[in-house]
Image (tube, rainbow, N blue to C red; front, side, top):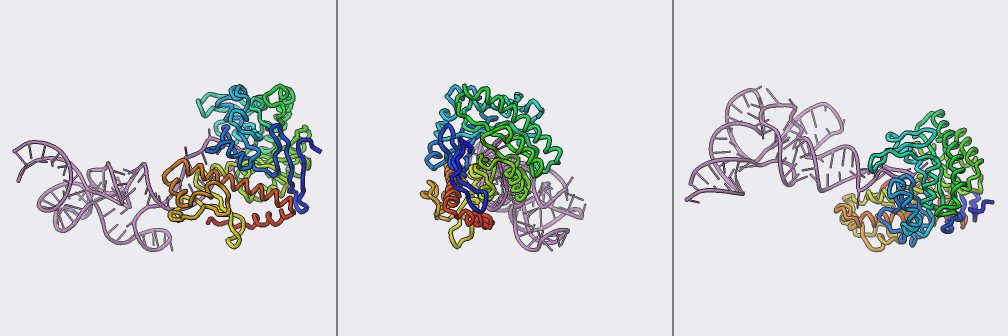
Length: 386
RNA sequence: GGGCAGAUGGUAGAGCGGUCAAUUACACCUGACUGUAAAUCAGGCGCCAUUCGGCUACGCAGGUUCGAAUCCUGCUCUGCCCA
């Protein structure tokens, strides 16, 4: 039994389970969604508000905070929790995703990754060791090893190269973490390993076995939702899952839509992070629960559509968020049309509440034994926009 | 009363004989977004047609020309200047 993860209830028909991840900044009830605060802020939302809505863990990014304001400054501030006034847990990405998303501007070698800074153009190298050092300075509760993965599609050889390198980097990161964690801003920080391998079963197996042999308390599954068909994504996740210890917590990096999250919970994933609710909110795409009789699951709307011009009803009258309780679709549309910052803020509030409420429903359904029904709802969910 | 400048698609504003259904911007319509260099990006935007294409258009009316938003004449309107 892991001492940092306690499984509370298992769904008898799938790999879904509820549990508690114990972190240095409190318990995190899984399955959980982590709002993304890349640069130490959930865009347009204060930490306190997020906490009030029941968020227990957020994700921040090593690469961005290293570049600005620098991990040294955040350490001086007493760590990222203090710096941004976030009382819950923090999960930090290692910078590995930037290797992928900024691929054209980045050079990768066994040593590490060399970036051209987006701020001043200067070049910097991130290594497995320095990524750990930076995350220790940030004082996050769960840190990730630096990893590498190709986009989709990639040949087996290309994927194998990144799996091998990710394992080598994981070993180095673990050594560095063991050496330094005790005297850092957050001595209780955990370091988790990352499983790569794309859609190749053998490579997922290799990665899962190698990484789990290194003794990490938890794991992240990466390299998914990078352009592969959805069924391939689920395949990659379940390959990785089948070679990882069942009693360890598993995070699915960068996923996903509400339906995908429910699908991945069924495969045994415990935590999720994704820019969808926050980014799409800023772009006016909002999530709405369907009421009985309207269809299954949820739909999305682009709130700036003309059809909402004179729609004086709440965005989602099943929603308990500040936006839905106080404003109409017509007003939201007007705020977006007028580029009023309040529109972005209300939309972000709503989408995050939608995701957080979804996770409450997921946890409750597992506890009450009705997860299968919920899963079916989202699997068959109405695809169309409202 | 005289002189000068101008009138172009929802708006502003290019174009000044053919390659113009007309640059561009804004507005408007629609879509995309998955470990955030994304309050970003993409497409559409005269009418008809699924495509080929057809039709109507650059103040109004005539004219020159194989051909006009582009040249000429008159008219209407607008702005500025002189009386």
